[in-house]
Amino acid sequence: MSTRLKTSAMIASIAGEGQVTRSAPFGHALAELARTKSDIIGMTADLGKYTDLHIFAKEFPERFYQMGMAEQLLMGAAAGFAHEGAQPFVTTYAVFATRRAYDVIHQTIAEDNLDVKIVAALPGLTTGYGPSHQAAEDLALMRTMPNMTVIDPCDALDIEQMVPAIAAHKGPVYARLLRGNVPAVLDEYDYQFELGRAKMLRDGRDVLIISSGLMTMRALETAKALEADKVDVAVMDVPTIKPLDTEAIIREAKRSGRMVVVAENHTVIGSLGEAVATTLLSAGVSCAYRQIALPDAFLDASALPTLHDRYGISTEKMAGSIKGWLG
Image (cartoon, rainbow, N blue to C red; front, top):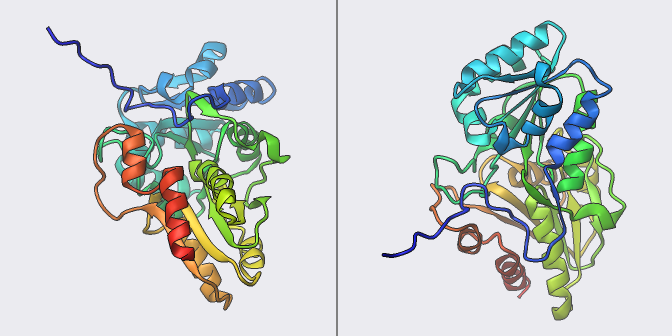
Protein backbone atom coordinates (compact mmCIF):
# COMPACT_ATOMS: atom_id res chain seq x y z
CA MET A 1 0.00 0.00 0.00
CA SER A 2 1.44 3.40 -0.96
CA THR A 3 2.01 6.07 1.64
CA ARG A 4 0.12 9.30 1.06
CA LEU A 5 2.50 12.26 1.22
CA LYS A 6 1.44 15.20 3.36
CA THR A 7 1.22 18.60 1.71
CA SER A 8 1.68 22.00 3.30
CA ALA A 9 0.58 23.85 0.20
CA MET A 10 -2.23 25.68 1.98
CA ILE A 11 -0.28 27.40 4.74
CA ALA A 12 3.32 26.67 3.76
CA SER A 13 5.95 28.95 5.27
CA ILE A 14 7.81 31.28 2.93
CA ALA A 15 10.90 31.03 5.13
CA GLY A 16 13.99 29.46 3.63
CA GLU A 17 15.79 26.55 5.24
CA GLY A 18 17.57 27.72 8.39
CA GLN A 19 16.06 31.20 8.20
CA VAL A 20 15.24 32.91 11.50
CA THR A 21 11.49 33.18 12.07
CA ARG A 22 9.10 34.36 14.75
CA SER A 23 5.85 32.59 15.49
CA ALA A 24 2.53 34.38 14.97
CA PRO A 25 3.78 37.98 15.15
CA PHE A 26 0.34 39.42 14.39
CA GLY A 27 -1.45 37.46 17.12
CA HIS A 28 1.12 38.33 19.75
CA ALA A 29 1.30 42.01 18.76
CA LEU A 30 -2.49 42.37 18.82
CA ALA A 31 -2.79 40.70 22.22
CA GLU A 32 -0.07 42.95 23.62
CA LEU A 33 -1.77 46.08 22.30
CA ALA A 34 -5.19 44.96 23.56
CA ARG A 35 -3.88 44.84 27.14
CA THR A 36 -3.75 48.62 27.14
CA LYS A 37 -6.43 49.37 24.54
CA SER A 38 -9.76 48.08 25.72
CA ASP A 39 -11.74 49.07 22.61
CA ILE A 40 -9.98 46.45 20.44
CA ILE A 41 -12.03 43.39 19.53
CA GLY A 42 -11.05 40.42 17.39
CA MET A 43 -13.36 38.96 14.74
CA THR A 44 -12.97 36.16 12.23
CA ALA A 45 -14.89 33.88 9.89
CA ASP A 46 -13.94 30.40 11.09
CA LEU A 47 -10.23 31.09 10.61
CA GLY A 48 -8.92 32.17 14.00
CA LYS A 49 -6.24 29.48 14.08
CA TYR A 50 -5.15 30.11 10.50
CA THR A 51 -4.83 33.88 10.92
CA ASP A 52 -3.11 33.72 14.34
CA LEU A 53 -6.11 35.42 15.96
CA HIS A 54 -6.47 32.45 18.32
CA ILE A 55 -3.74 34.01 20.46
CA PHE A 56 -5.91 37.07 21.02
CA ALA A 57 -8.99 34.89 21.54
CA LYS A 58 -7.32 32.85 24.26
CA GLU A 59 -6.37 35.93 26.26
CA PHE A 60 -9.53 37.96 25.59
CA PRO A 61 -12.38 35.48 25.02
CA GLU A 62 -14.98 38.11 25.95
CA ARG A 63 -13.67 40.38 23.15
CA PHE A 64 -13.47 37.68 20.46
CA TYR A 65 -16.25 36.99 17.94
CA GLN A 66 -16.32 33.86 15.79
CA MET A 67 -18.78 34.59 12.97
CA GLY A 68 -18.58 31.28 11.12
CA MET A 69 -18.01 30.91 7.39
CA ALA A 70 -19.90 34.09 6.54
CA GLU A 71 -17.48 36.80 5.42
CA GLN A 72 -20.15 39.29 4.38
CA LEU A 73 -21.77 38.98 7.79
CA LEU A 74 -18.34 39.36 9.37
CA MET A 75 -17.71 42.68 7.66
CA GLY A 76 -21.20 43.99 8.32
CA ALA A 77 -20.95 43.11 12.01
CA ALA A 78 -17.53 44.78 12.19
CA ALA A 79 -19.09 47.95 10.80
CA GLY A 80 -21.76 47.80 13.48
CA PHE A 81 -19.20 47.40 16.26
CA ALA A 82 -17.19 50.32 14.86
CA HIS A 83 -20.30 52.50 14.84
CA GLU A 84 -20.64 51.74 18.57
CA GLY A 85 -17.06 52.77 19.36
CA ALA A 86 -15.16 49.48 19.17
CA GLN A 87 -12.07 49.00 17.02
CA PRO A 88 -12.49 45.65 15.24
CA PHE A 89 -9.50 43.72 13.95
CA VAL A 90 -11.06 41.40 11.37
CA THR A 91 -9.25 38.38 9.97
CA THR A 92 -9.94 35.97 7.14
CA TYR A 93 -8.17 34.85 3.97
CA ALA A 94 -7.42 37.61 1.49
CA VAL A 95 -9.52 36.05 -1.27
CA PHE A 96 -12.59 35.98 0.96
CA ALA A 97 -12.12 39.53 2.24
CA THR A 98 -11.55 41.12 -1.14
CA ARG A 99 -13.52 39.01 -3.60
CA ARG A 100 -16.39 37.66 -1.53
CA ALA A 101 -17.02 40.61 0.81
CA TYR A 102 -15.94 43.54 -1.36
CA ASP A 103 -19.34 45.20 -1.70
CA VAL A 104 -20.09 44.97 2.02
CA ILE A 105 -16.71 46.52 2.88
CA HIS A 106 -17.29 49.23 0.28
CA GLN A 107 -20.78 50.18 1.47
CA THR A 108 -20.71 49.56 5.23
CA ILE A 109 -17.07 50.24 6.20
CA ALA A 110 -15.26 52.41 3.64
CA GLU A 111 -18.10 54.78 2.73
CA ASP A 112 -18.58 55.70 6.40
CA ASN A 113 -14.80 55.77 6.97
CA LEU A 114 -15.13 53.39 9.90
CA ASP A 115 -12.26 52.32 12.13
CA VAL A 116 -12.11 48.68 11.00
CA LYS A 117 -8.80 46.88 10.43
CA ILE A 118 -9.03 44.00 7.92
CA VAL A 119 -5.99 41.72 8.25
CA ALA A 120 -5.96 39.08 5.54
CA ALA A 121 -3.87 35.90 5.32
CA LEU A 122 -2.65 33.97 2.25
CA PRO A 123 -1.89 37.08 0.17
CA GLY A 124 -0.72 36.74 -3.41
CA LEU A 125 1.15 33.51 -4.12
CA THR A 126 1.59 32.25 -0.54
CA THR A 127 -0.55 29.17 -0.98
CA GLY A 128 -0.32 26.42 -3.56
CA TYR A 129 -4.05 25.64 -3.61
CA GLY A 130 -4.84 27.39 -6.87
CA PRO A 131 -7.06 30.36 -7.84
CA SER A 132 -9.72 29.67 -5.19
CA HIS A 133 -7.23 30.63 -2.46
CA GLN A 134 -4.54 32.69 -4.25
CA ALA A 135 -5.28 36.38 -3.72
CA ALA A 136 -3.27 37.72 -6.65
CA GLU A 137 -5.60 40.71 -7.19
CA ASP A 138 -6.35 41.83 -3.62
CA LEU A 139 -4.21 44.97 -3.51
CA ALA A 140 -5.60 46.23 -6.81
CA LEU A 141 -9.14 45.77 -5.55
CA MET A 142 -8.55 47.52 -2.23
CA ARG A 143 -6.50 50.36 -3.75
CA THR A 144 -9.54 51.43 -5.73
CA MET A 145 -11.70 51.79 -2.61
CA PRO A 146 -11.98 55.36 -1.29
CA ASN A 147 -10.84 55.92 2.35
CA MET A 148 -9.00 52.57 2.42
CA THR A 149 -5.38 52.42 3.58
CA VAL A 150 -3.54 49.43 2.06
CA ILE A 151 -0.48 47.72 3.58
CA ASP A 152 1.74 44.83 2.45
CA PRO A 153 4.22 44.07 5.29
CA CYS A 154 7.52 42.31 4.63
CA ASP A 155 8.23 40.19 7.69
CA ALA A 156 7.67 39.58 11.41
CA LEU A 157 9.09 42.95 12.49
CA ASP A 158 6.99 44.81 9.93
CA ILE A 159 3.84 43.07 11.22
CA GLU A 160 4.69 43.63 14.89
CA GLN A 161 5.21 47.35 14.32
CA MET A 162 2.31 47.65 11.89
CA VAL A 163 -0.31 46.57 14.45
CA PRO A 164 -0.02 49.55 16.83
CA ALA A 165 0.47 51.90 13.87
CA ILE A 166 -2.79 50.96 12.18
CA ALA A 167 -4.58 50.99 15.53
CA ALA A 168 -3.48 54.61 15.97
CA HIS A 169 -4.73 55.48 12.47
CA LYS A 170 -8.44 56.36 12.38
CA GLY A 171 -10.17 54.83 9.40
CA PRO A 172 -10.39 51.54 7.49
CA VAL A 173 -7.23 49.56 6.77
CA TYR A 174 -6.59 46.52 4.61
CA ALA A 175 -3.37 44.75 5.56
CA ARG A 176 -1.91 41.58 4.14
CA LEU A 177 -0.84 39.01 6.72
CA LEU A 178 2.03 36.55 6.80
CA ARG A 179 1.03 34.04 9.47
CA GLY A 180 2.57 31.13 11.33
CA ASN A 181 6.38 31.07 11.35
CA VAL A 182 7.20 34.38 9.69
CA PRO A 183 10.73 35.26 8.53
CA ALA A 184 12.62 37.90 10.52
CA VAL A 185 14.37 39.89 7.81
CA LEU A 186 14.37 43.56 8.78
CA ASP A 187 15.87 43.29 12.28
CA GLU A 188 19.38 43.93 10.94
CA TYR A 189 18.41 47.11 9.04
CA ASP A 190 17.55 49.46 11.94
CA TYR A 191 14.00 49.38 10.58
CA GLN A 192 10.94 51.18 11.92
CA PHE A 193 7.51 50.86 10.29
CA GLU A 194 5.86 54.20 9.57
CA LEU A 195 2.46 54.35 7.94
CA GLY A 196 2.74 55.86 4.47
CA ARG A 197 6.55 55.82 4.40
CA ALA A 198 8.96 53.87 2.21
CA LYS A 199 12.32 52.84 3.64
CA MET A 200 15.70 52.51 1.92
CA LEU A 201 17.22 49.29 3.26
CA ARG A 202 20.42 49.34 1.22
CA ASP A 203 21.96 51.55 -1.45
CA GLY A 204 23.39 50.54 -4.82
CA ARG A 205 24.58 52.22 -8.02
CA ASP A 206 23.26 49.83 -10.73
CA VAL A 207 19.68 48.84 -9.85
CA LEU A 208 16.96 50.17 -7.55
CA ILE A 209 14.45 47.50 -6.50
CA ILE A 210 11.22 48.97 -5.15
CA SER A 211 9.35 46.18 -3.39
CA SER A 212 6.65 45.29 -0.91
CA GLY A 213 5.68 42.27 1.18
CA LEU A 214 7.66 39.07 0.86
CA MET A 215 9.29 40.46 -2.29
CA THR A 216 11.36 42.79 -0.13
CA MET A 217 12.87 39.66 1.40
CA ARG A 218 13.48 38.32 -2.11
CA ALA A 219 14.95 41.68 -3.17
CA LEU A 220 17.47 41.64 -0.33
CA GLU A 221 18.41 38.05 -1.17
CA THR A 222 18.76 39.00 -4.84
CA ALA A 223 20.95 41.99 -3.99
CA LYS A 224 23.33 39.73 -2.07
CA ALA A 225 23.31 37.11 -4.83
CA LEU A 226 24.19 39.68 -7.50
CA GLU A 227 27.18 40.98 -5.56
CA ALA A 228 29.16 38.04 -7.01
CA ASP A 229 28.45 39.40 -10.49
CA LYS A 230 29.56 42.91 -9.48
CA VAL A 231 25.97 44.20 -9.73
CA ASP A 232 25.25 46.79 -7.04
CA VAL A 233 21.59 46.71 -6.02
CA ALA A 234 19.64 49.17 -3.86
CA VAL A 235 16.44 48.03 -2.12
CA MET A 236 13.54 50.25 -1.11
CA ASP A 237 10.78 48.66 0.98
CA VAL A 238 7.29 50.09 0.39
CA PRO A 239 4.98 48.52 2.99
CA THR A 240 2.23 51.10 2.49
CA ILE A 241 0.73 50.73 -0.98
CA LYS A 242 -1.87 53.43 -0.34
CA PRO A 243 -1.08 56.21 0.46
CA LEU A 244 2.11 55.77 -1.54
CA ASP A 245 5.33 57.53 -0.51
CA THR A 246 5.69 59.25 -3.89
CA GLU A 247 8.30 61.71 -2.62
CA ALA A 248 10.77 58.96 -1.65
CA ILE A 249 10.14 57.00 -4.85
CA ILE A 250 10.69 60.02 -7.09
CA ARG A 251 13.81 61.07 -5.18
CA GLU A 252 15.48 57.66 -5.52
CA ALA A 253 14.36 56.99 -9.10
CA LYS A 254 15.77 60.32 -10.27
CA ARG A 255 19.31 59.25 -9.45
CA SER A 256 20.92 58.71 -12.84
CA GLY A 257 22.31 55.43 -14.13
CA ARG A 258 20.06 53.04 -12.21
CA MET A 259 17.46 50.69 -13.58
CA VAL A 260 14.23 50.76 -11.54
CA VAL A 261 12.67 47.34 -10.88
CA VAL A 262 9.38 47.01 -9.02
CA ALA A 263 8.93 43.61 -7.35
CA GLU A 264 5.62 42.52 -5.88
CA ASN A 265 3.73 39.36 -4.95
CA HIS A 266 0.68 40.42 -6.95
CA THR A 267 -0.60 40.47 -10.49
CA VAL A 268 1.08 42.95 -12.82
CA ILE A 269 -2.22 44.84 -12.98
CA GLY A 270 -3.29 47.51 -10.56
CA SER A 271 -0.91 47.51 -7.61
CA LEU A 272 2.58 48.73 -6.67
CA GLY A 273 4.07 48.40 -10.17
CA GLU A 274 1.42 50.51 -11.83
CA ALA A 275 1.39 52.97 -8.92
CA VAL A 276 5.15 53.50 -9.19
CA ALA A 277 5.03 53.77 -13.00
CA THR A 278 2.25 56.38 -12.81
CA THR A 279 4.17 58.29 -10.15
CA LEU A 280 7.35 58.42 -12.22
CA LEU A 281 5.57 59.30 -15.46
CA SER A 282 3.56 62.07 -13.78
CA ALA A 283 6.73 63.52 -12.27
CA GLY A 284 8.59 63.41 -15.60
CA VAL A 285 11.20 60.96 -14.32
CA SER A 286 12.90 59.10 -17.16
CA CYS A 287 14.55 55.80 -16.28
CA ALA A 288 14.83 52.20 -17.40
CA TYR A 289 11.84 50.49 -15.78
CA ARG A 290 11.00 46.82 -15.30
CA GLN A 291 8.48 44.84 -13.24
CA ILE A 292 8.71 41.50 -11.45
CA ALA A 293 5.22 40.35 -10.57
CA LEU A 294 2.67 37.60 -11.11
CA PRO A 295 1.07 37.28 -14.56
CA ASP A 296 -2.44 38.39 -15.46
CA ALA A 297 -3.66 34.80 -15.30
CA PHE A 298 -5.24 32.17 -13.08
CA LEU A 299 -2.25 30.64 -11.35
CA ASP A 300 -1.46 26.94 -11.08
CA ALA A 301 -1.74 24.75 -8.01
CA SER A 302 1.50 23.20 -6.80
CA ALA A 303 4.19 23.44 -4.12
CA LEU A 304 5.17 27.03 -3.39
CA PRO A 305 8.87 26.76 -4.40
CA THR A 306 7.79 25.34 -7.75
CA LEU A 307 5.27 28.13 -8.27
CA HIS A 308 7.67 30.89 -7.23
CA ASP A 309 10.17 29.62 -9.80
CA ARG A 310 7.49 29.20 -12.46
CA TYR A 311 6.21 32.75 -12.06
CA GLY A 312 9.60 34.42 -11.61
CA ILE A 313 9.41 35.57 -8.00
CA SER A 314 12.01 33.25 -6.46
CA THR A 315 15.42 34.71 -5.64
CA GLU A 316 17.13 32.73 -8.42
CA LYS A 317 14.61 33.76 -11.08
CA MET A 318 14.59 37.35 -9.90
CA ALA A 319 18.37 37.59 -10.07
CA GLY A 320 18.35 36.01 -13.53
CA SER A 321 15.78 38.50 -14.81
CA ILE A 322 17.75 41.50 -13.55
CA LYS A 323 21.03 40.20 -15.04
CA GLY A 324 19.27 39.66 -18.37
CA TRP A 325 17.85 43.20 -18.37
CA LEU A 326 21.24 44.69 -17.60
CA GLY A 327 22.72 42.75 -20.52
